Amino acid sequence: MSLVPARKIGRCFNGAERDRGTIVHLVEEQPVTSCGDWFDKALCGSQPGFRGNGWTKSDKDANCPKCLKKQSKSEVERSVATEAE
Ligand SMILES: [Zn+2]
Image 1 (cartoon, protein in one colour):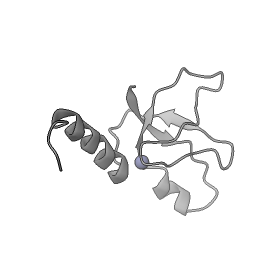
Image 2 (image 1 turned 45 degrees about the vertical axis):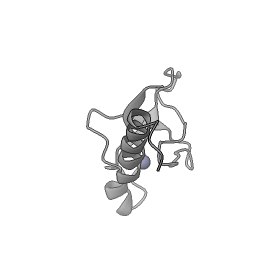
Image 3 (image 1 turned 135 degrees about the horizontal axis):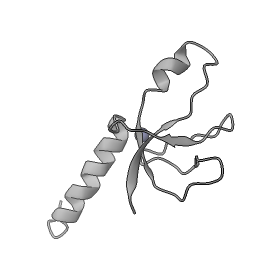
Image 4 (image 1 turned 90 degrees about the horizontal axis):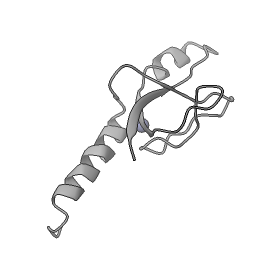
């Protein structure tokens, strides 16, 4: 599985969308569809598509705290798999 930074394709329905659109999640990479977007759940469980918009790859690093936490946790779990909690 390879995770890529992606953000929801935002349309400016209201002022709040601008801030929300800057959150970059980690999403499992999928083959690009004809639209160039995809709808998988992000690592944190966030999912686009409420308004028919998918993910778009971001050239920025992921900044969603939940995604980053999950990613580092899974990396830690892999490296200390033999250690009991
Ligand atoms: Zn996220």
